Length: 477
Image 1 (cartoon, one colour):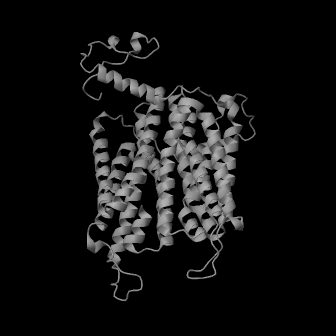
Image 2: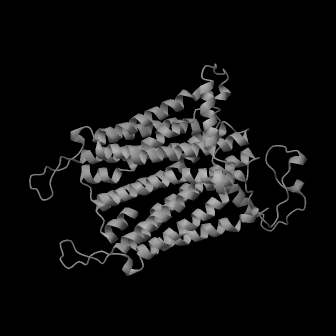
């Protein structure tokens, strides 16, 4: 809800507010890459996370104070009034410092939290996959709650209440993370990843004449995430500006539409993951979603290309403006819905199908996730900067067709690797097992715990005695 806050409380022009939001989104994609490099090279994941959390907390508190302390935000002033007092520079300094700190701190935890979580299960690939499934589930669920409930509080209760909810959630999360400190397996930094990358480049050049191996196990087609991320972030990052400039949508309404897109973009991956696990499988879910995303992005590009699909330019106050045909908005919103729906369907399933290829290689699985996030965030940075620059300085048509091309390329790369993928059949809804656990817990709440591990249910398959889990206890480990 940052754009609305800047416009309403700090009298920032709508286009400027959208540009600030784009910078925040771009930095939010770049910083996780830098934080991952720092964590691997110098500090380690644990230190990087708690330091970043403190920075994020400081920024969020400063932002909440701008909504609480009257002297930290401009006094209300009607447009055209001659009695408005000048805005002190300190207000802008505090505001932008808050935004920078909150963005910097949040970005520092986004990639490292997943890494430290997977690190606890380095020798258990099956459990590692379950961890990532739940990690993404909670991540996207929290994004949905933030994009709906907290935004509702900010819009309908007060900015102060909404921002202090953000502060409270930051504090709670930091405390929970630090409380588990003594249980974590902490790994020492292994040095800069660019050293290994340089070795790969040198080896590639020196061995460029060597014949490629014939076994398909040596290949994995995962780079499609780059194209699909470029396509989605490329048009969402500048959506507000496009709606305001080309479709004469009111700035606040344009922000609300963008909020709905971001909220849906966090909810749909959860639904897509359930559909993939229960019915279609990851492969089918991805290619169907890619086609839906391509159709939506293509429609959006057509609204910037075909004159009859967008309103004619009209100056404010002019009496000769022609009415805006409803079909233009039907096509526009259909494009946004389809592109959001399709992109959301690939965001969680691409990482899952990638991890499935390395199910029996936990070390390689960890390397895959490191590079997956690296390319994901790198593509987001490129989309938030280069593609947005093209849209603003060349044309909307050029920018959107770059998104179309990226979508086509990403889908094509994914489908080209089809015969190499290990495809797993859907195992049914994960909520069925969850419901069974809840029902069993309630019905057996009075049953005394047995004293030996052999008396516990270890799964449907026969498990050797030496592989049995330890007896549950009242402690975490």
